[in-house]
Amino acid sequence: MKVITVEVREDHLETLAQTKPLVALAELIWNALDAEATETRVEFVENELQGIEKIRIVDNGHGLHYDDALLVFRNLGGSWKRQDNRTRQRKRMLHGKYGKGRFRAFSLGNTVNWHSTYKEGKDVFSCRISGDASKLGEFAIYSQQAEPPDRATGMVVEIGQVNDSAGMLRGVKAMEDITNLFALYLRQYPDTRIVYDGLPLDPANAERRFARYSLDPMVMESGARVTAELDVVEWNIPGKRGVVLCDENGFMRVNALPRLHFRGFSYTAYLKSAHVATLDREGLLDTGELYPDLRQLLDAARAKLREHFALREAEDAQDIIAFWKETGLYPYEEQPRTPTETNERRIFDIYATHLDRIFTDFSGASPRTKRLVLRLIQELVHADPVRVATILDELITFPEEAEEKIMALAGVQPEEEAAGE
Image (cartoon, rainbow, N blue to C red; front, side, top):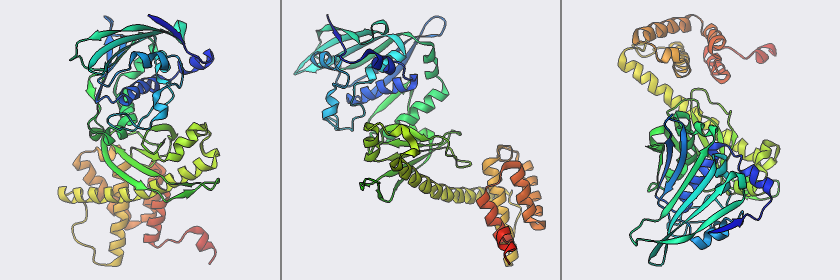
């Protein structure tokens, strides 16, 4: 056994060891993927009281060689990944480059053991590395042992004396969050499998729709010409939203706009650019929109998302109306015969479909209740469409742009224009 000490300030290690549980666990999964694992399993071992006794991250990657362990556990940032952008065999894009993941494991528990199995030529060996939070920055590396030649390579990270906060890593919310983190990677490398708490991550099951846009080239204040892509994933599960900044390969760096809301849609937008990685290296991502480069990138993302969701809302509206017609809920039977009737029908469609999309009490109501409400809206629109807009705005915050469209169809001028005549 050899004992090595990390050559970096202790307070820096303590900061790394206080990472949020989900971020720490994600780093360990990324380490497995960077080691070219095709399957990674996250297991929670329970005690008799059904509390978490241990956390295991098991992968079938190429493992960590004993000689490499002596190097990388001594030097923070001494990983071979810093010299490469892709894995050695499968040529996947790498995530980690600074060797922080192994220290962040201590935010999950007080003891961490790495069991590595690797090949050296035709022979197979294993070694073990262990660390304790009470001696942060000090690791014991045990001598390599010969293994049978048919032994599979890989890494098992076992975390013991688990912290209470690790309970946040289980349940529906944790599964959603971890799926969100690895959605693009699993899309990019479909031969990769992540099993989390007994269930395989499958972004396709969670996704409602996927779209990819190439944003117009941008010129930063420095004169640098920057390109970016925006991947928009709409989720089946409600409540998710935000713009996530990623490097050009889709690796998430920071959730920059977690409160950017488009009514009725649950989504995550991945803004991908090599410039994001540059800003991350320079420590500028946390400045948010105070930094001009980030403001320009996020403004471009907002504009594209407004365009995307305007089209999606129109598509959804047509689908809703088609369903109502098929099921006999739509209150109009004949085609409109005059321009006035055509406008009235358009106003009704805007009101009714918007109500269905954002008001769950209506969208989940029985067919009889829906038929009654739609018939009442039809009568109100025929009598006074402007009054209906006022009522809906009072009750469910009807969108301003929809109100303006209705006013135009109803022939009502904006107040400032009327006042100027």
